[in-house]
Every structure is written in structure tokens, then in C-alpha cells.
Length: 146
Image (cartoon, one colour):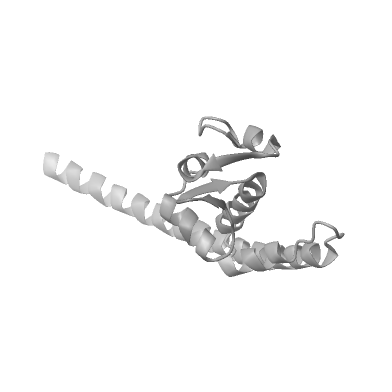
């Protein structure tokens, strides 16, 4: 069994077919904690090979964790990520999986657009308030100097 050091990039790690990486290296590779990896394992999202107490992650686990991280980044719940990953059929065309992914992605895009609008509005409001406060401060500093 080949072991890859944490210093290898995700791209090179994902190109390897029969290599495994240890939990610490996997955590470093993705910038997550060991606890996070164990949690994802408990939820059935990844399933590392076990040799005694050692967890060994395959190329498949790396790909799945990459999808988990992307899903979490764009706001999918872990349940949604698992649902999408569970639809994968290595022997099939994965039409149902892709339809589900597109449908969920479109709904999430609408949510993110609304969040962006809310953040932009909050930023405008804060900028206006800051401008007012700066003007008041400048006036008061001028009055104090006179």
C-alpha cells in the first residue's frame, strides 16, 4: 500500500488510483479537522479503509470530500450532499443524479442571490451611516478646535 504525504496537492492526490492517505494528511489537504472527517464518516459521506485504528482514504474518498466541501461552500446541507452522492451509479448515466443536482443548484442559486441582495443592502446602509458619523465627527472636531 502506498501512502502519500500531506504536502502533495489535491490534484496529484486525485490522480493516484491505488494510493491511500492517512486521516491527518486528509485533514491537512482539505483544511478540516480530524473531528470533521470522523463526523463525515459517521454520517456515511466518506468511508475510509481501516487498518487497525488507522483510517486510510482512497481516491474515491478524496473525490467525495471534494464534493462535500463544494456543497458546504455553496450552502447545501450535508443531507442534500449525501442525497446527491448516493444517487451516483458508477455503471450508469447518472441522469437522476444530474437532474437532482441541477434542480438543487438552481434553488440554491436563488437563495444565494437573495442573500447577496441583502448583504449589498446592509453594506449600503452601513456606508451611509458611516458617512453621516464621519461628517458629525468632523463637525465636532472643528468645533472643539475653535
